[in-house]
View 1 (cartoon, rainbow, N blue to C red):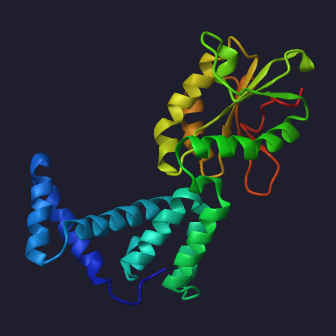
View 2: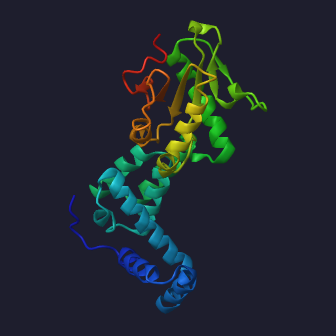
View 3: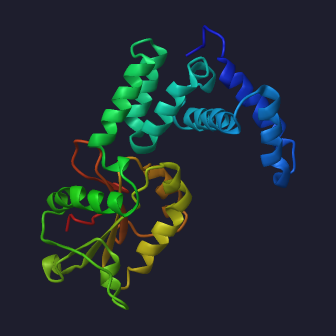
Length: 263
């Protein structure tokens, strides 16, 4: 995708602002931003929004291969709608960005569709509400995939490691105790990569209690972010594996040769 129109003024200003701010010492950057805003006749928050939009586009390019330069030709509002959408539904946001570039969606339509997506996605919620709602939504899918009775762990009990998972198999089912630990969930997909090791370490620590552990990855998490840690740790795929439910599909297990849930 090659831009056939010039970058918008907000993008040019964001590049310049970021370059000038980065040249300042960390403690002086907020004052520097205020000085730049005064010189340009803008509110400091407006400059922050522009730089944040540019930062998002560069991360978006790394993760989707859609060029930042192409999207910098659109209004900053469009980029903010894409950023918000990407935080809770990366796949839909990528499709929307392509539609925007191809001229198949207006900025106003983009705003409305992003707003609508937040009413149907569990990831539009935050904090404990997001965690509880996702756990409720995924329970049936995990049980169907496992094809056996599961116990939903409702609360943490002090010094009881079996209460640290979200779901666990009945102790006598198939003569093997399996624990399921939901990763996150997080609205920001970048947090999965940042915390992948912590989740793998937590699941691995529980293996003396469970014969097998599954890390359940939400739809906006990337499997490779976790496999990048799983592989060098040389963990047996029959004891610890990743389980993901792509939208509208049956659960998929990684590594593929894992026998968790198949014995």
